[in-house]
Amino acid sequence: MHFVTEFVLLGFPGEREMQMFFFSLILVVYLLTLLGNGAVVCAVKWDRRLHTPMYIFLGNFAFLEIWYVSSTVPSMLINILSDTKTISFTGCFIQFYFFFSLGTTECFFLSVMAYDRYLAICCPLHYPSIMTGKFCVVLVCVCWVSGFLCYPVPIVLISQLPFCGPNIIDHFVCDPGPLFALACIPAPSTELICYTFNSVIIFGPFLSILGSYTLVLRAVLRFPSHAGRTKAFSTCGSHLMVVSLFYGTLMVMYVSPTSGNPAGMQKIITLVYSAVTPLLNPLIYSLQNKDMKDALKKVLGLRINQN
Image (cartoon, rainbow, N blue to C red; front, side, top):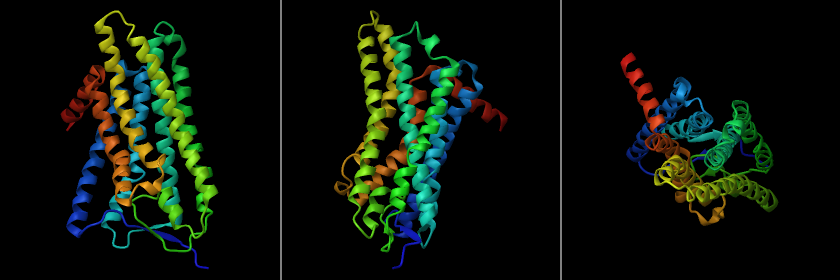
């Protein structure tokens, strides 16, 4: 029996002109994402006013977004220009590992950031003694390490399935849904394990975020002053927007049954959470945060003056 040694990623459909339009659009989005998130990382690093747990988490989140978008977009761009559109068997699963590990790390960071806001708003007097610099570093390390420890098991299980042809994936990334469809034999147990795994990884942090913000909302509504409520909602609003964007697309893609999403819809949803959301996140965080806005002006102004 002949086994597959490479896959063909069909990517985006259309004539050459349409392909080049997609290439240009995705390249601009990618470069702006690197610029936006890179500016946030530099602002947190260089501005001493931002050396607090909230901004340290945000800086790490922006750094994560750079790697998250880089795990798929460069290969997506190469795929558009390629005539063969092939990716090796090993390369496919390496991309799968990094894309999903970084996505899992993002879920964990969003959960930790929600917990930080809960402590700051609901326990302001105890916040400095709980969210110490040491505890902040521990939480950051736990997010990074645990994110990369979650996906080896599902990836090993899927990679052990027999792939004997065809080898065409109607997508621009190596995703579990299309890979299951290409396996020579049905693998309901492996599919169930991966589906359960995805659900736990997505819903675990999501329920944690929901719990944190339920308590935050309850506390904010008890604030005596309107100004205090407005400031609290402003602080949490940007984070809630990012959570809604990321989790909304993620749940449609990986928690709802994959058979319900046609290939075109899967591509659009994947493009939103893998490329568009990392582009919007720095804008969302900076537009609603005066300290971050001032720090970014300083960073970008410094760069312009140096040039």
